[in-house]
Each structure stands twice: as structure tokens, then as C-alpha cells.
Length: 467
Ligand SMILES: [Fe+2]
Ligand SMILES: [Fe+2]
Image (cartoon, rainbow, N blue to C red; front, side, top):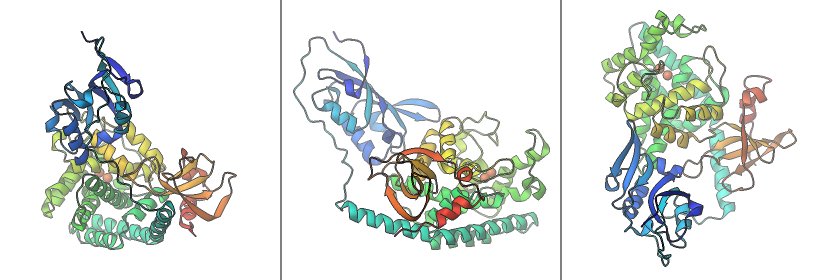
């Protein structure tokens, strides 16, 4: 007779055990790409996939698993499957695939099985055959190109912010057009300036509604493009144009809120008429965009970007079911809050991006859908562009590149201050993926650390020169 189910870690798997369930999976399984879905369907035929969706945990037959699903665990693993029988060498494979904790049975008296190969069809990550020196040089060129766009990005951001302000003013005067937003979007697309604008947003903060719309839309565009790429889809300029416009327009309903309320530095009481007017910007926005003949998805973003996953929260409005909120809008709501944190808004100072991501992760599942939050963090990185990091060798560096496909915890940084606290004039690029000995110790609040002026950190960033 078999023993009852026992929980073991991957290190404790012992030949002779039979795996019945997999409890804990690495982060890779939170956002299923088509290849991983195929791997799971092949190796876990007949098992049950436990996925997390908005209603909570749901058990589905493995053959019904789909790309984009959020896999929590695997249950009812048939003992006829090769992968169910622990044989020598299986634990190593399991660890490699990111299976971390198991529920197993140990049949009494059953001898260890001879070694069998796991039917693994998940391709090992492709390793491109380039020398590390070549890879480093290519990265330096890429980062130089990115840094070269910073100044132009700052100008585009200022110009776009003025266009958003004009658009809202026109709306107030009853002659609304989307021409200004269209022109701003074309300029950003033409310059390929989104990443650089994203970095400027993290380094300079912002102090007004208009810049919020611009920063939100470039971060939104980059995050959405990353999700598409991650799921094997092509990112066309049409798609980028669409997400940028949807971002620019998400708060367009604020054109019906009096300017003195919008720009007030007073925090309004939750039940005040001012707060009610502010909250109505979503309904106003949906109506304006509908009148302009914008797409349903763009309207959905404007209408529902403040609906939280837990719609009973006070911060959730309007009062509708979360089912009506498109995945695109769910992503927009994460970006909206992220930008509100990194931008200086009325009664609070700006947060640095790395602290904002930490905060958002805490709201996973309550304010935000798990899947969208995971996607967002993957796209912007745990340490987004422009973050100042303390490294394990005590130096300080700015994040200049993140590689979502690799490791969100290991960005590419440029060291600006050595371990003795001296500002460097000669800068060096470090790819943390390539330097296993150097790790991130903490996110440094660059507004606090470089506090001679509000733009000191930004100015240091702009002065980076790579030899
Ligand atoms: Fe809003
Ligand atoms: Fe917003």
C-alpha cells in the first residue's frame, strides 16, 4: 500500500518516489508562453492544471491549458507518466525546468527504477554563439544609442505634455480634436524614443496631469509590446501607435473637470463634490472618445482604468464588474498607478521607479490582476530604466538596459560612483548577467541621494559617456 502524500522539495526527490502533484513552480510558469504550454501538454498528459484567473484557482484538464494562462500548480499526475516516477537524474531535470516542490508517494518496498530519460520537449534556451567580448561591445553600442536619445526624449516629452494640455484646454472650450495627440505619437514613433522617455520619466519625475499622460503612454506602449513579443507575436508600428494613443487619451475626460480642481494642491475629501467630479473623468472620457469614433479598446482604457481587481475597494470606480475590463485596460491600470507613483503629484514627492515596482508587487491580486502585474514587472524590470542601484562592490550605477527575456533582477548598469563614494568621470558598463560576482544590494532613492537640486541625478545620468 502506498504511503500518504508527502511534501518534498526538489532536493529531496528520491528514486522510487512517485510524483502526484507539483506545488511550486518557478516564475516562468506564471506567464505561459506557447512553447512552455506545449512542453506541459506533452509531459503531463492526463494531469490537471491549476490556473489562477480572476475568480481564483480553477482546475482544468492539461490539454485545455492555453498560452497567457497563469499556472499555479499541477495536480492528478497519472503514475503512468514517465515524469511521475523519480529515477536517478530526474531531480536535476525537474530543477532545470523550474519545478520546485512536490507532493509524492513512496510505495513500500518498491525498488528504485532504472534511469529513464524524461520526454522533455522544451527547448533549452538558445545560446547565440558570440564571444563575450563581442556581446559586450554590441551592448555598449546599443546603450550609447539609447543614451544619445535622452536629450531628444526630454524635448519630446515637454512638447507632448504641452500638446496634451492644449488638447484638454480645447476640450474645455468645446472644440476637442485628437490632432495634437496624433502628432505627438507620430513624433515619438519616428524617433523610437519610448525607452529614452521612459528613463526620463523615472529620473525627472513630473508635477502635472499632462506629463502623466505622456509618461504613462510610453511606458504602456513598451510594456504591451513586451507582452506581445513574449507570447511570440509581432509588434507592428500600428500596435505601437494604438497603445500610445490609448495612453495619451486615457485621462481625456479630465478636460471636463475644472482646471482649478485638476491643478489644486489640496487633497479632497473622499465624499466631496470635487472628488466626485475627478472620479467622473472616466465616464466623461469614454463619451468624448466615443464621439470621436475611437476604437472600443481605447474607450475601454479611458472608461475602466480605475477599476480594481477587487472592485469593492474605495479606489475602484466606476462600479462595474471586472469582467468588463479588457486585459489591455488591466495593464493600463498598473501603468497608471506606476506613473502616478514615480511622478510628483500634488501632495507627495516622486518615488524612484525601483520603489514603485516594490509597492505594486504588494498589490498583486488585490488592486491588480496577477497576470498583468507579472507581465508589467517583467517588461519594466524589477529595477526599471534610470534606477540607481547600490552594487555588492559598494559602487553605484544607473540602469541603462533591461532584458526581460533574460533576468529581471540582472539589468545592465553604468557605474557612476565608485565604492569610495567618488563620482566617476570615466564610465563603465556592467552587464549583471555576465558578472555573477556582482549583485544588486539595494535600490537607492536618487532624489534623496543626489539632493543638491531636483535634477541632479538626471544631470549625472545625462553626463554618462561610454568610451
Ligand atoms: Fe485616470
Ligand atoms: Fe491617469
